[in-house]
Every structure is written in C-alpha cells, then in structure tokens.
Length: 110
Length: 114
Image 1: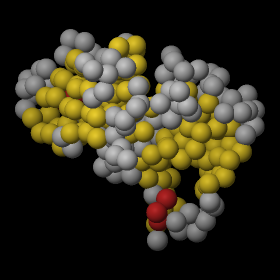
Image 2: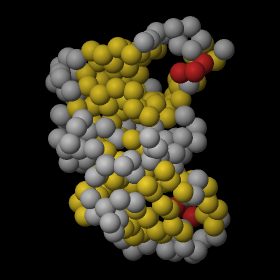
Image 3: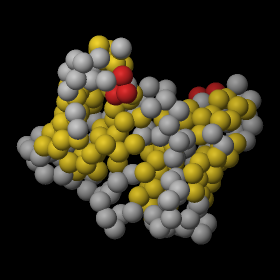
Image 4: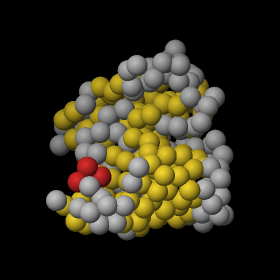
C-alpha cells in the first residue's frame, strides 16, 4: 500500500506570512496533484506535476515535484485569509488509482 | 457546464437504517470514483468505475456497502445497515482518463448516523 504523508498537519499563520507544506512518500508516482478543500465542499484541483524537479507557479503558490518523484512541496507567499483550507496532495499510481494524503489544515488569520 | 452533482447534501439517520447517495458525473467522463472522507482526513477510495464496470472495489466493505453504475453514467452508493462509524462525507469524483488524469469532485454527501 502506497502511503502519502503530509506535514505539518495543522498550520496557523498571520496574513502576509509565507509558508511551505510538504507531501512525502517512499513510492514513486507518475504524477502528483495538489487540491484545496474548503468546508462543505469537495476538493478542487490546484496543480498537477509530472516531471521530476518540475516547478509550477500559480499566482502566489509555488509547487515543486521532487527529483525522484516521491515528494512535493507547496509554498505560499504572502498568505491571505482566502488561502484558508485543507490542502491535499494526491498521487497518481501510474493510472491504477489515486492515493490521497491526510492533508494540511491551514488557517490564515487577519 | 454542470460539475459533478451529488445528492443529498446532508443525511441524518439512526443506526441500522439504510441510506443511499446519488452521483451524476461530468458529461463524457467515463471514470467515476466514490471516496469516503472522515473529518480532517484525506479522501479514501471506496470504489472506481470505468464506464459501468467496477474495476477497483477492494476497499468497499461489501457486507454493508454496495454501489452500481448501471448505464455507465450516474451512480448510487448504498449502505445497509448503517453503523455509527459510517458517519463521514461521501465524495463522488469523475475523470476523463483520455486526457490528463484529473479528478473533479462533487460537494459531497455528509452522513450522520445516530
């Protein structure tokens, strides 16, 4: 069973601060996705990373896929209250299934 | 275009009662997933369909859970009888595996078993 670990589990910061959350596994995956989920809603895709070492930017969010395709990070610059939510990483096991991590719950305080 | 539609959004039942959830995926998406999400946790796969065929149901507790996708479009997930530990959010997602394998989720059905 492939497992994804995410850290930290909880993060509470002030608006304007920077933060990084991590997603790690002992397995290699064909791609990795980051989702954000707000209360009462389903997860919404933020980005897909495929190539080892790949870096993608989405406004203030920077996503990186590890060289060995086993880990990923999400960096948020100058966090805003609208960034509050549950950040989930999900790994695509070569088209067999998606494995989700437990998530990082982010609270950005005004 | 409508997204993934789930109903009901909320359901409260007493233990041992049956419950059913319905999902209508995005038009043209052949792959449909049912996930279970406990509070503060990531989604866990229950069953995956390719068209009308269940291709991965290894995590579905078959003694009380059942699912169907008869015409390869919408799907129903049933629990009978429900137990207290079944309280969770049941998420449906669909994907078009012909392109980038991206999941589009519905808003979920929140089940509370009393």
